[in-house]
Image (cartoon, rainbow, N blue to C red; front, side, top):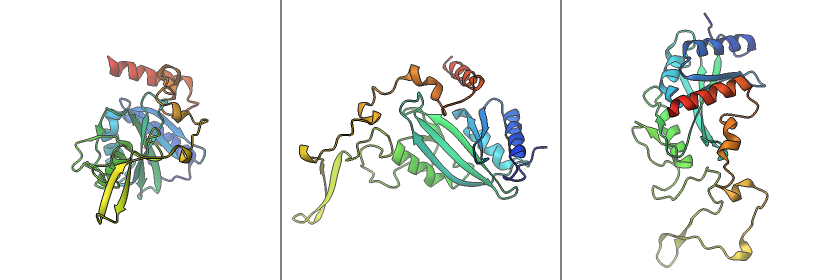
Length: 232
């Protein structure tokens, strides 16, 4: 039995990660310990609900607390959005990070049916990144206006935005107008690759960067094999 007894024992966490991979081979694609001995599990998007359910309810894990859900955007990846679920087991004083991936058009399953705390976290990710969560009970913006154009945390979102919101003294109300910037106030950053987006996205060149750089070759082959299987 590989119980997640303590985050202070790297060997035990490594064994526990392997135990998770053995129990859920259909969904777990990669298991790793980072430099500070934090367990990270990369899963296929179809495994969000079964993996989270297993980690929460299995007697050997009991990760019953969802600390956070966040996302990152890397346009050079085939699946540009990476979702990160941070779980905490109070029973075993352990943490685990579950990571998966998606793109602009493919929804992922909402985890609200497993963790009620997912509701606002997923709304925030939808608002800021534009990731859709299937079967979410109330998927709408949470930080920006409901009529806001775009998703501010995407790397290709302009720093100035698309519109200007201000209070009109004459009308005594908030007005939203198209953004106008005089040329002398514009600042161009030619050294950043995001200025040339979407030409920067070279799927063939960056297909091995699905999760992170520096994976062992066998893990790269496994991920590519799973991608090909999904396409078929």
